[in-house]
Amino acid sequence: MKKLLFTLLSALALPAMAQGPYEQFKAQLTQPAGYVCYRTAETLKIDGKLDEASWQKAEDTCPFSDISGEGFAKPKYQTTARMLWDDDFLYVGGILEEENIKALLTQRDTIIYRDNDFEVFIDPDGDAHHYFEIEINARNVLFDLLLNRPYRTGGNFLIAWDCPGIVSAIHCEGTLNNPNDTDKFWSVEMAIPRQALTWGFESPLKAGNYWRINFSRVQWLKPKGPEENWVWMPTGKIDMHMPDRWGYLYFSNKTVGTAKETFSYPYNMGVYKLVWSVFYAQQDYKAKTGKYTDSMEKLGFTASYLQNIQKSLPGNVNISLEATANTYYLQVAAPFEKATYTLTSEGRFGYQAQK
Image (cartoon, rainbow, N blue to C red):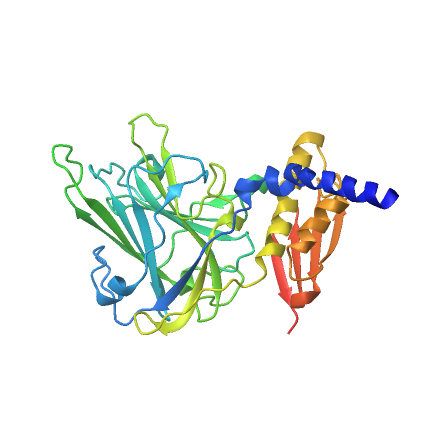
């Protein structure tokens, strides 16, 4: 009878999974997509047209969607991006459908998103810290900056940084700032030098490496707003500065158009989800109590809840959570892949695999 009662209680406890962190932060825990970036087969002329054979062979990302994710309105205009690389540059192309192409700002490092714009966010080492943002409008005016970490954990930005050696161009299939005709689209082309994207790590632009990257389009459908935010990878809230939510960019050594390479993630995405669910649970807990906790249970990870998570992984993981009122350190050891995942209260992510 006791065994039956335990079984029944366990069965009744399973729906409680619906109240846990995975469900509470569902919009912030969807799996980011990946993009295989191939080598260019030729020298690209940066003119905004994206008409070289290499660009024509490069795959588009999926069309951008609302930054908040599922359940929100489909963007009025389609936006896609594509990428290529060589030993010196990461090349970014964007195509933005637009009926009335307009841009008023003309000075570099003004707040470009007050115009309709296209934005690139790059975290070369994938630690969710030390990343770059480049915005551009239809006049080819740039706003580039670097950040030490996201605003959500007290990050600061450096507007004085100008991406050294960047080359960019805009092509308009239509007319700029003429509301009396109907335009088709404007396209962006950027060549971002490998030397520009270094911050304490060596030349990350090489075959076999992964970066985190995202794209955003700010669109003012009404002059006084609110502005629309359409992105490649939704972050789950109106905040682009969530590098854990960005897509994965994998650099293939293959030349575009010669062979296909299947994208694979650099680590187990189930463990990755667990790590970041703790981050969002800690953020929520501190907002409510004024402090962090070293108790997984207080964060919503009861024994039964963790057991269900373990079942979804290839093997068991060992979780260690240390915390003071103002800091915490999470370590998740995954013996099945001989790797350890770490996360600090400042949101810095780490992954160490045994060699």
